Amino acid sequence: MATLETLPGGESCEIRFDEALRLHALERFQIVDSQPELPFDRIVTMAKRVLRAPIALISLIDQDRQWFKARVGLDVAQTPRSLAFCDHAIRQRAVMVVEDATRDPRFAGNLLVTGDPGIRFYAGAPLITRDGQPLGTVCIIDLQPRAMTPGEQETLADLAAIVMDEMELRLANHHLAVLAQTDPLTGALNRRTFFSLTEREIGRRSRTGCDLAVLLMDIDHFKKINDTHGHAAGDKVLTGFTHRISQVIRVQDVFARLGGEEFALVLPDSTLAQAVETGERLRRIVEHTPIPTENGPIKVTVSMGGAVVHPGEVSIDPALARADEALYRAKHEGRNRVLAA
Image (cartoon, rainbow, N blue to C red; front, side, top):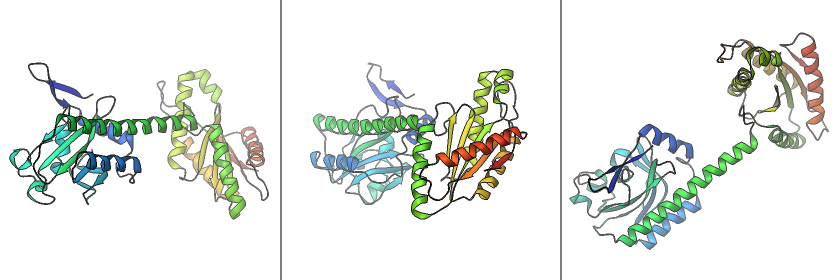
C-alpha cells in the first residue's frame, strides 16, 4: 500500500509506495503498450485546450520508462524513466507544478530541458488506484515558464480522476467478463462458454471445410481421491490438472470444464488421428506429473475419448456423443488411455 509522508503540522506532502506493488498494479490494468483510444485522446485534447498548454499527456510509469497512453503536441511515445518529470509527480499527493524547470535543481540538467523539446513549465496530476498505487499522471507541458492557478490545478486533478475512473471501470468489466466465462474453481472455460465458442468453430468448419476434433476427458478414480484425501485435495487435483493441460495446448484450442471431473478440448484443424496423438501426449503429461497437495503429491491419470465433426453436422453435440462413447470404452477397458470413435 502507498502511504503519505506528513509534515510536522500534519499536512501530507509525499506518497511513499512499494515499487513492486506499484508495478504489479500497473500490470493488472493491461494498458501499457495498448493502442490509442478515443476516450483518452479526448482527455489530453481537453487538457491542452482548457489549460492552454502546447503539450498534454497521459503518462504511465513503467519499470524503466514512461509511456504515453495519449499525447498531443509531442511526437515520441515514451521516454526513459530517468528523465520523466512524471516519476516525481507520482510521489506527490496533489498536482506537482514546476513553473520554470531551469530554476528547479531537480530538472535544470534534464535532457528534456536542456535539449528537445525544451521543457520549461510542467504540471502533473497523479493517477492513483483505489488501493493507493500511483501509476502515472495526466500532465501538461509548456516551453515557456508560467504559473498555474489553484483553479487550473483543480481542473487537471479532475481530468486525472476521470482517467482513473475509466481505467478502474475497464478493469472491473474485464473481471466480470472473465468470471462470466470461466469455471470459478479451475479457471478453465465454463460449459456455457465452451458451447458458445464451439458454435463458432462449427460455423468456420461449414465455411472452410477444415477438420474439427473434440476430446472428452475424465480424471480417473476422482471420487476415490476425494474419499481418501479430502475435498480440498480433490480441488487441488482439479486445478492442477487444468493447469497442466492449459500450459501445453495451442492458443486456438478450446478447453473447458463441463462439470465435476469431466473436461472437454476442441481442436480446430485437427483430424481424428491428430486428436488421438494430442490426447496421448496430454495423457502422458498428466500421468507423469503428480499434483502437489497439502497431503503430499497425488498421482493422477486421465481417460479420453475422441471424435471429429462430420460433414453436414451443424452442432458439436453429435461429435460429443461419439466422444462420450469412446470415453466410456476407455474407462471400462482399464482407464488411463485414449480411444477414438
